[in-house]
Each structure stands twice: as structure tokens, then as C-alpha cells.
Image 1 (cartoon, rainbow, N blue to C red):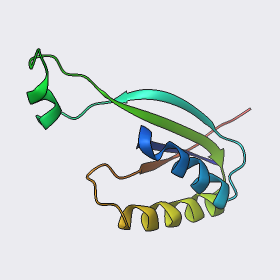
Image 2 (cartoon, rainbow, N blue to C red; image 1 turned 90 degrees about the vertical axis):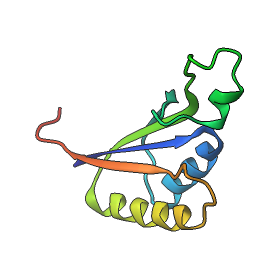
Image 3 (cartoon, one colour; image 1 turned 45 degrees about the vertical axis):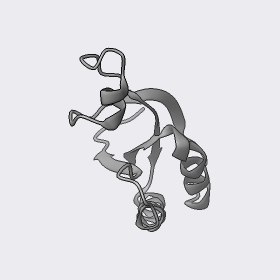
Image 4 (tube, rainbow, N blue to C red; image 1 turned 180 degrees about the vertical axis):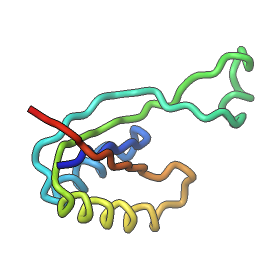
Length: 101
């Protein structure tokens, strides 16, 4: 068993849910988060207070699952990201689980 963690900007939330389903991962959790980049953006330049940094609305999903489902999910994410015209791809990491109850 491993822990897969996926992050995406809010506009891709539905796509991530679809990718989890296509990969056969039926049990997972999600949460809304703020994503930050340290590089200045056009949005910051348009802000009334350019010194303040706001986060981008993002989503975080995670699931405890097996390697086979993770490989399927990673393949789907790679294919999805290959079609994007943005610099905000879906990102995913895998963390091994040493113990669980």
C-alpha cells in the first residue's frame, strides 16, 4: 500500500476526479487549498497591493492504494498534462507506507 497525493488548480478539479475514477481508485479524499508560486505573476502586478501575495485556488486529493492503481493514474495524468496549454499541470507524488492500521 502506498499514499498517492495529487494537486491541481481548481479548474482541473473535475478532471482529477475523472482520472481517479478511470484509474479505478474509488476511495480517496480531497480538500480545497491555496497554491503559491514565488515567481511574480501578472495577477500580482494588477493587484491594488502588489506586495501582498494571494494563493491560487487549488485542490489536493489523496488515496491509500496499491501500485497497480497508481501506475494507471500516473499514465492518465501524464496523458492529460501532455494536452495542456498552461504552466499549471496536475502534479502527483507517491509516498510509501511503512505501517497502517
